[in-house]
Length: 436
Image (cartoon, rainbow, N blue to C red; front, side, top):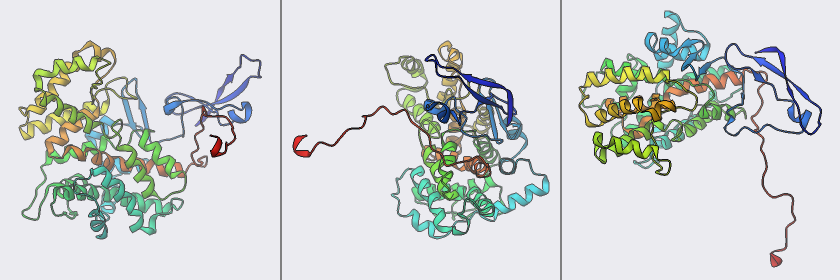
């Protein structure tokens, strides 16, 4: 970051002296006011619930311009990455800052492939869960448990350990997600197959059985690969901030990523695509396409408690660029599988059309987001709704690791310690229990 010639001056109406604060410029995006010495100079903190106006770190990984609807990984537009690169290239870019050449891609992909198996003991650990446990409950436990199996890569301050842990996490997440699915389905686990692509291997581990050979359908593999790319990173969101905060204590990478998985589970974050499909199921049960008008009326009624899931975004005030790409993939998948007449998909497309034309939603910039389309695509592929967020966690793992490694390498990083505006009781003395 670059120190600006401009300074911010904080003035007080009570006559306290003004305070000059440094202003820093990034390569793109808003400037930031450095308030690190604010408490020492004024005895006051800033108050920013949800951190909507606070930059907690400096980062060179991902940039979002919500007004323009722009998403850049290391400077590259997401539209170019999703159409010209695969997930392994995207992982290399996020981790190391540059896209690999052909030789570098082959070497990186091979390195990931060589770490896709997990310790056999993980199967016994998995059996401790109920068969109907939510996959995210299982994933939180499995990812955290990796630190118990891979002691040789748990020192977050050792660059070699961080490198090995990064490759292991990226490689093993598809295996763990597939194991969680197979366990809930009561099917045998399928081991990774080294001659398949990252997405192809995941599809095989998910849907193959020992009974017969499984050949992944190329259109579906491409769709899954695109889902991974579009979800790989998204700047300082709740789960990424959780990983950074957790990692700032010096805990091991597996524990930090497990914390990210737990945060992602929330319906306001990674669970949004699951909530979106459940919303469509509810409308379908009430009568399908014919009931959309009634549903929209309930959404507009603030007292109804009914929400339109899969539309709008905390950051994007324009069309989410990932949603446009996922919409294209959605049409490809539905065409390939001949599902355009499926009642749920007809409902989803009808709801999309109505919401995009309704002034109520247009004026509020409530466009379909990536969760809306990715949920439809995953259901079409055959992935159960309860597994959607686990696949999101799989894709986001590389972003979490890149952000964690960046933080560790930042000479200014400290253990996270937010402050508060205290509104509780002032100091008081305990009254003996007989007199209370």
